[in-house]
Image (cartoon, rainbow, N blue to C red; front, top):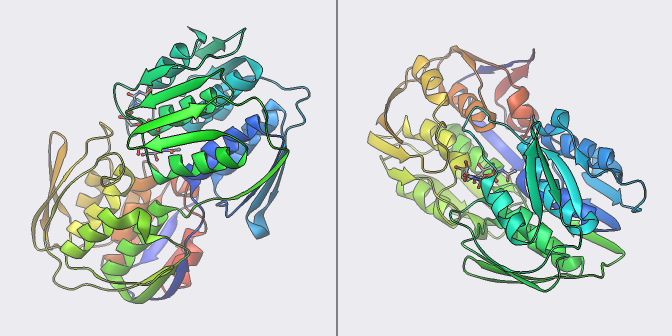
Length: 418
Ligand code: UD1
C-alpha cells in the first residue's frame, strides 16, 4: 500500500495551480446522462472521477478521458442504456447515487445501489428519495438497492427539503430537468458546485432560476445536441494549499481560482492573522507568525465548509490560545484528531466541538489516513512538524487531490510517495 513520506519544516516557495472541482465534476458527469454530446474541460484527474466514468460507461455512455488536457468527451447515443448502478461502483464513491435522478428523468426507471456508510458518518439518502417521491417516482428498497420507477414520467411539483443536502439538491434538480411542468425546490444547498451544475444544465437548454435557497426548474423536453463546459476550480483544494502556505510558505502564489467563492474562508484566515494578498485570478501568501485563536462552525455554503475543517484544525494548532471548531454537518468527522494528537497537538473533543490549544510544536510520526480530508490534514501537519511524517493509506488522498505531491514538490516541499 502506498504512503507519503514528508520531511517537515521546509519552506514552500513557488506557485500552485488549482485543479477543477471534483465535487462539481461528479454531478455534471451524472447530468451527462441527460445529454447527447458533452465536452468537459478543467476536470481533475483523481480516482473519484474515474470511478464515476466507469459507472457511466457501465450505463452505456461512450467516454474518452484526455488526461493531458484534463478533458472528458461524452456521448450518449441513447442505445443499449443500462439503468443500473451496481454496488461495486457506488460503494467506494457515494456520489454514484447522483445517477438516480437523471436516469429516472430520462428513462423513467433506475436501480441504484444504496451507498452505505463511510468513515465520516452514516450518509443516508432519505432526502434524495423524499424529492424523487414528490416528483412522482415509486420507490422501494430491496436487497441493498433503490428501485425507482416513474412509468408516465416525473411531474413538476413543490418540494421543501427538511434539511440542507448538496447531493439531494443536485439529484432533485437532475430529476426535475425532464419532468413535466415546473418544480420549485426550497431549502436547497447553494454550494458553488451546485451552481456549476445549474450553469451546465442551462447550456444544455434548461431553464432554471435561483433566488436565495429556492431553485425553480422548468421541465424541458428538448436537449441541445452538443455542449462544452469548463468546470469551476476546486475551492477545497485551494483552501488546503492556502493553509499550507500560511503554515510554512516563504512566498506562494496560487492560481486558477476565483476568490468570489471563498470570501468567508479568507476572512476567517485573515482574522487569524494570515498574510494574504489577493489579485484577480491568483493569491499570494507567506507564512504567518503570531497566528491568533478563532472559533468556527461548519455550515452549508456560504458558511465554512466541513471539507476544510480538518485542514483548519492543523492551522489552529499553531495559533495562540484555545481555538474552537464545531462540526455541524457530519457526526463523525474528527477522525484526524487522534492522529494529530500523536503528533503532539493539544486537542480535546466535547460533543460536536473540538478545542485546540496552541501553539504546539508538532513532531513527525507514522499516521493513518481515514478519509479524504483527514488525510490531507495529516500531510499539512507533516509539513509543519519536526522530523519525518509517514502518512499511510493515501488511497484516500488520491480520491480527491490531483498530483498532490508534485504540486508540493514544485514548491520545494520534501514529499515522497513510496
Ligand atoms: C457533499 C460533498 C462532500 C461534502 C458535503 C457537505 C460531493 C460529491 N460531496 O456530500 O464533499 O462534505 O457535500 O458539504 O459533492 N443527509 C441526510 N439525508 C440525505 C442526504 C444527506 O440526512 O439524504 C445529511 C448527511 O448525513 C449530512 C448532511 O445531510 O449530515 C449533509 O450531507 P450532504 O450535503 O448531502 O453531503 P453530500 O452531498 O453527500
